[in-house]
Length: 216
Image 1 (cartoon, rainbow, N blue to C red):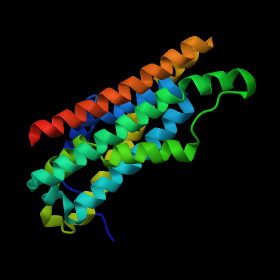
Image 2: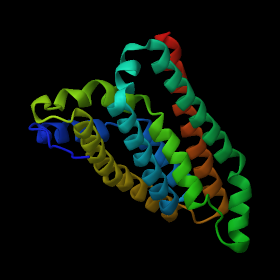
Image 3: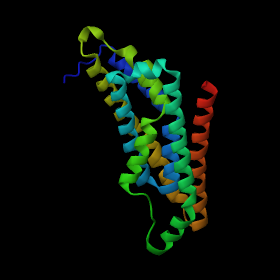
């Protein structure tokens, strides 16, 4: 499959950067994970997150975009699933904060595996309501129909979005993780940071659910 480059590609890049830099569920989720578990977990989470976002762009490219854009029920369902998953991850982080902090003093810090971090990030990225709006409503505006292969253009622009998001969100994750490592000089501080990270995830999930309910 060929991927023709749209003539307005640089306008799209600027729009993508603006959308990515605006703090949303993905950015705040990565920061929360960095505070709770450190830089390595944050970067793995970002990798999964951008893969989820790219998967969403592919789904939009093959035709689901118009359905999500026109179907209020489908859009609300995505919001509620995403919000519920964020709440689950937040509760899990709080539940294990004391256990993992205690383990750190005995055998090194215990953190989620790379696979689990990528998996968690993937579903947050794939179910991000902001991503649905961007890929279904904004991205198609930059398609150049005269160049043909609209699906290829959409996938190409989705890949660009994922690359930009990886470096941007990854930067936030590394920064937050660095600050966390600097502050985590004792168990109590580490527990507080993980509780904070879990609380942020829960609040993000609740905000997403409330937004979905208000749209009903």
